[in-house]
Image (cartoon, rainbow, N blue to C red; front, side, top):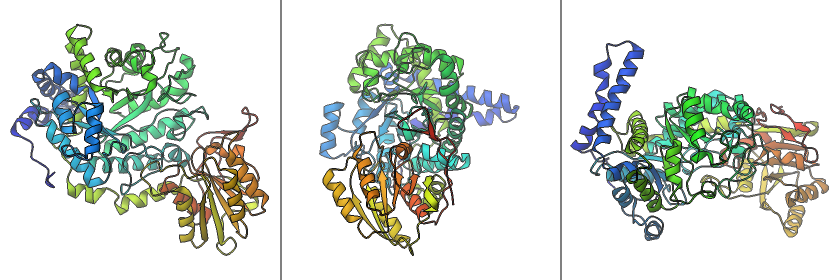
Length: 609
């Protein structure tokens, strides 16, 4: 790929002049009339593009697909093999040529996101292939960059606190700034649609798939933070995507592996689940992602929401008045595949009111099923045109018709800039939550607690951070004047590893234990109890869900960080050392493990010093 972005062809420019011409026409009208006239003029230009598209091109425009490889035209052989096995093409360029896909989603595991300049070149290669099509239309490139525990673009990009951490911070300004930074860096590498922010209200502590990906358990607090993030992404020129409609916050089943049922009544849904989506719509959200969940109160047929006309058209479109892009959650997830076959799912999703069909397990099956449904009369071409117009409107709004390409200079200036990194540290510092501090044990002082042992869970890096967590914490404490050593004991420490940790605690001034989703039978409980029994003071740091403190005892202090990314762990180290005051407040309640009806720590709880 050349370093200089290729110039769009004359044909490309001709297809979009109508969309760009409105400003001159509407300049003398009143503001409201001006906006309406401009919108109608833009739509006329976009409809002319749609009129020139073949049926095959129209079907392709509805799909957002994964593809393996770091390059659009020259991926590694293993990625060529994976593409051939799963999609029947060798490269991203071939994918576009054969299926005319309107969107591509990036994943780290698909080797799309190795380094910022490489991502930008991949994006440019994809756009070059798209603009060489008979009807040249730029691709909308997307990813899941929620931050916290779900990220696809890692270091040297700026990594920011995730949703529940921002919920603990409680600052709309910080949430908006975090989204703006995330959006600016995504746009710089050519990613213009982000599947964030999560609008689910996490009212179920046992939720296996949402948890800290949610801003919290209070619908109004979540709504405010969702709206703030939508505004931040919009400032950066990136389409935000609120998910997972109609609300995935009260599930006990992971929809990647099964089909969850939400038992909320219509009234409970309106009170608990709807407010963040209403707020997102009021903030001008560009796209909303569906959930593969059953909500019998909203659709008695018990179809998953992704395939539910009463939910997507009846509630989202008509009741909530949303006319933006609706994108499915991944069609490869088990939750959407349990009731209907893979050839029926995309057709039913379109009939329900969906616009973008995300990542089907077999693109050939899904693409041909939609094509056949139109030819057989089950779907009309007009129905496809409705969705394509929404998709093209979004591409036009994002400026992709004017400038589809990323630049090397933009990547170098924006991605992982010192200013962004400093903002990330500042925002993270305001999220760390102090839940327990017996007799003012914290902050630690190098004069009194010089020798520190850091033990605990070292889950795999969630987002291209350097990790592991025990090493990150120990390094940060050492940089703050302590003598800190790390010992990884794991999420399920063995008896031998627990004995090793107990022996290592001998002679130490304090032991810091990083805990990870401590359950009733977790050996992490034994680890903490045995360390407490040594007489060396123990501090626990919950590095994912904040509920761990309810299952542990004997520690002198307890912190919650809401994720184990470097930015959160370094902030926690500064709080432990008294270089920063803990100011985070719980965005979810922590209930007693023995008596779930009793709150140990309510929403809004948090100590300081």
